[in-house]
Image 1 (cartoon, rainbow, N blue to C red):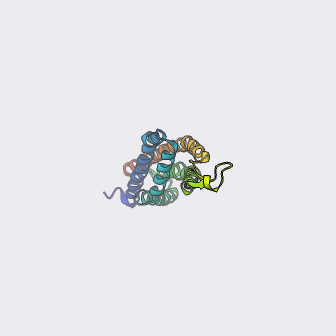
Image 2: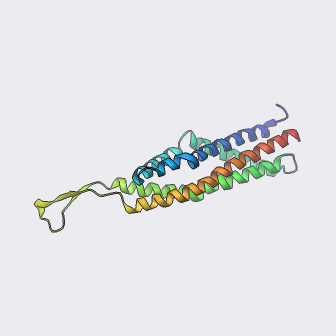
Image 3: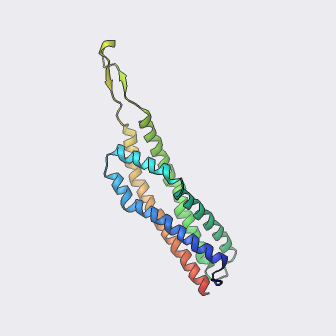
Length: 191
């Protein structure tokens, strides 16, 4: 236990955090998005928008925040100790997680989520309303429901392709980071 030390235990927690985040992302890459793709666009888009709203909350939002903070601190600490066993692997794991996991999330997936949320909210905000039929008088007013917008359906189609492709990148980055951190720990303890 003493051989591991505080940095070693921090690496254990960070590796587990990266693996857990990667596992959640793996679920989306392998079956969640396939399920959402298999339903009508309005159902899939609304479900994904709801999932995105919940993803930032406890427990997943906390897992992301804690893992990102810990990996950042470990990366800085390890970078100041590159001559020690395992530290280059810890730095590599931190960089892979922060760039491939968190960086891709911030640069690609979150903007796609925001765009989907806005498109879905615009459709939700529109409600059926009475509009006069062409050439109709006041007594001939017919109710016409506003259908889901073509824009939202287009956003959903683009979202599915791009979001899933980049989610694969995030999944692989988190798995690679967990592996690199674990190898760094093994080298640290064995070195």
